[in-house]
Amino acid sequence: MALPTLAEASSLRDETAQQQQQQQAIQTRIDQADDETRELLTRLRDAQSSTQRLERYNDQLSSTLEEQQQRIERQQHALETLGETREALPDTLQDMLDRLRALVDADIPFRHAERAARLDGLEKTLVDPAISDEKRMEQLLSVWRAELDYGRNMDSWRGQLTQGNQQRDVQFLRMGRIGFYYLTPDGEQGGVWKNRDHQWHPLDSAERAEVNRGIRIANDQRAPELLSLPLSIEPGQASSESASQGASS
Image (tube, rainbow, N blue to C red; front, side):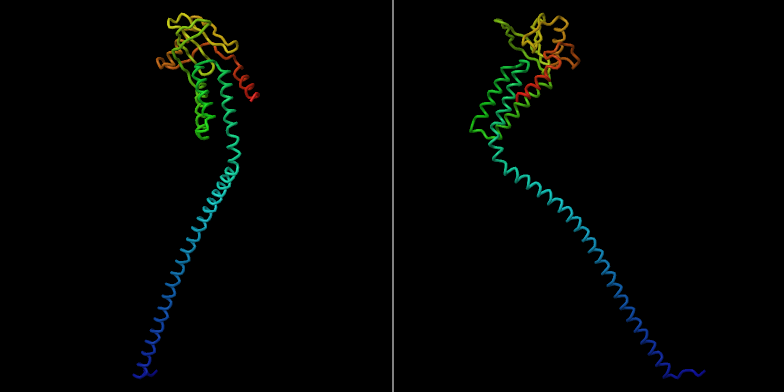
């Protein structure tokens, strides 16, 4: 086999170099296309992530907008009925005051003058045109809370006991709304109020000792403990009175 001439060898080198350049150009285009593809894929992933975030945001926004729409509708309804509510408010407040008076009148008569004065002050507030509806309602609720609190605590105070034409200084003890007692300063006399006949009943020496213990507990002079005392309200009486008040109202 004959060897190529110099001219043929030169032509072969040129052709090889040209093919290498073409392959390099093709490879460059492939690399560029690959870079562009990777960039497009990156953009696509970013777009998908943004789309998902937007979908979640839209879901949250839709829920928020729905809640706001419901709130707006409730407020609109409240505004539409505001006139009716304001017209009915004086009667409602007076009815609640009447219920309070009935409660105090039917209750054991502890601090009766103080509670009656509070109700009289409330009544003046309710009819005073210079006082806003908000202040009237606030005052009414304050008196209601004061009355409700009486049923959850015990109390003791010095006061005047009137029996017939006689008055004397005694120490009173109140246990919620179920027990009302008094004890003379020397501890020799004491009584329990009975709501069934609206009068005081005497206590024996053991019961007076229990009242004395209760007074010391109420005055934070003794740790709380169980007391054995007759009640001012007979079993079932409180529930029956509440039922009759509810029926009359």
